[in-house]
Image (cartoon, rainbow, N blue to C red; front, side, top):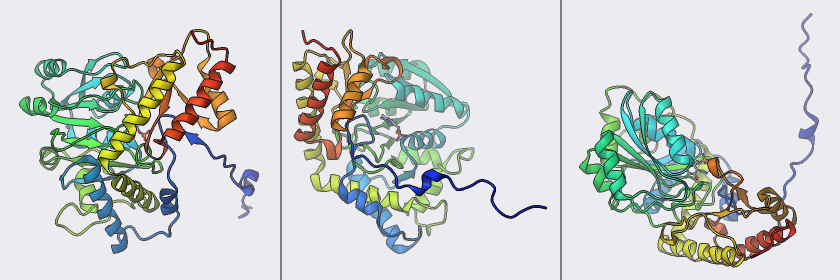
Amino acid sequence: NMSSAPTISAPECLFHPMDFPQKILMGPGPSNAPPRVLGASALPLLGHLHPEFTQIMDEVKQGIQYAFQTQNEWTFAISGTGHAAMEAAVANLLETGEVALVCENGIWGQRFADMVERNGCVAQKLTLPMGQVFSLQQIEEGLKTHKPVMMFITHGESSGGTAQPLEGIGALCRKYNCLLVVDSVAAMGGVPLFMDKQEIDCLYSGSQKVLGAPPGTAPISFSQRARKKVETRSSKVRSYYFDANELANYWGCDAGPRRYHHTGPISSIYALREGLARLAEVGLAESWANHKECSEQLHQGVEQLGLSLLVKDKAVRNPCVTPIMVPQGVAWKDVADYAMKNYRVEISGGLGELAGKVWRIGVMGYNCTPDKIRLVLRAFSEGLVNCGYKPP
Ligand code: PMP
């Protein structure tokens, strides 16, 4: 006698409203979203192929072309977080057995190499300790030795806190007939970046950092060379969802009518559009300058406390994420907990080898203002004193 009544009852927790503290997100991401972005994500839904929505997609595309400084036709947003864009780069640009050279100076190189191998390809690594950046000589050696079809490098390292100088790398990759993939999830909008001039073949970023939009969309662009590789592969792209041929069509980047590939995340695209609009209004040059100034204010404040930064060379510090060395005798978590409890300010810990050894403070987009820096410095320094830190 099968009853049609559900036997598992509705969870009690769903009958209460969500608990919503307002927090100042000064970790490596997500960063706070400005009201116009949050407001956009609350707008009514449109169909994913309605003309009003494809118009918004076109605006997003143009916003990404501006943010990336590129004229590439194949420019759109992946429906997924930064990791999804990483997967898309690997899936589209490599065929089984091909060799990628992966520059690893933090967890992003590690993860990218992992994805390369999961796709049945070979990851050859150039490795540096976190906090250091690659020289053109090191890169050229790697290209000569491994003869890769693709090279990966992280622009803004959020685990090691570096901003990799990109000048000259694209030219080297061309010389050795290799595609250049750059991860600028944690730098785009905060650090000068010129996709076309720097001859980057595949560039991706994320919505949740400088753009100040919710996590869930990832801007990406493919150069003509990269596009050619995708269009002339001998095997199909292994991932249906990330197939750039299909995505480019859905994003109106080819002559054909847009086909249904997947249902675009409507509300997230609205939010991304507003994040890009804000960046356009602030202006890239102004945004780069703001991130530099605010991060320097943070660095000075931290050094005045007698602490040191992981990245010694000022010229290669990523203004978006600053790792700070945890001094002897201080438990990093206690300080972060203090800042959260007393100021609702998020300060994060280290990742990978730096877990427990650094704090990381993020300065991105909507939070990139002198008052937010003063606030995080205050929460941090008070936390330090309360956790037994004695300045030298
Ligand atoms: N690359 C870098 C440099 C990042 O900082 C991040 C996010 N911390 C990612 C990739 C992955 O992004 P997501 O967490 O949004 O998937």
